[in-house]
Amino acid sequence: MAAASTIIDATAAPIPGTRTKTSLDAMLLELPPAEANQLRIELLAIIAAVKERCARGDDFQSIRDFVRTRLQQNQMDWKRARGI
Image (tube, rainbow, N blue to C red; front, side):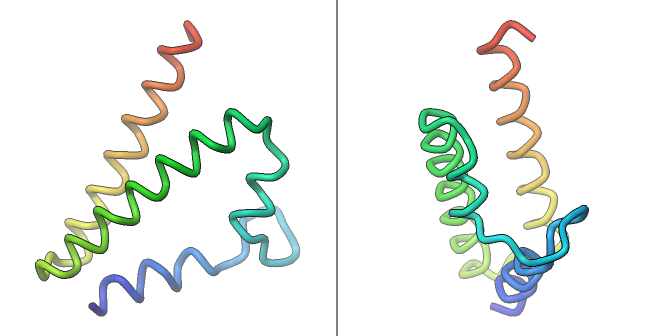
């Protein structure tokens, strides 16, 4: 469970380039509704997978690698869907 709290604490850090902490919901409100909804779904799926991995006792590095790979895949899917 320590890995989960480390990941959660890391997400509470201020976003680089901003002066204050910004909630995920506040950032999503700045996006077009369809984009925000898709991101929310993807992020909730990643969070659920991280919780599952933490419950299994996976180490921090393997969880971090999973998240990084999943985000990269989501980015490639997003670009492919837009012909980029």
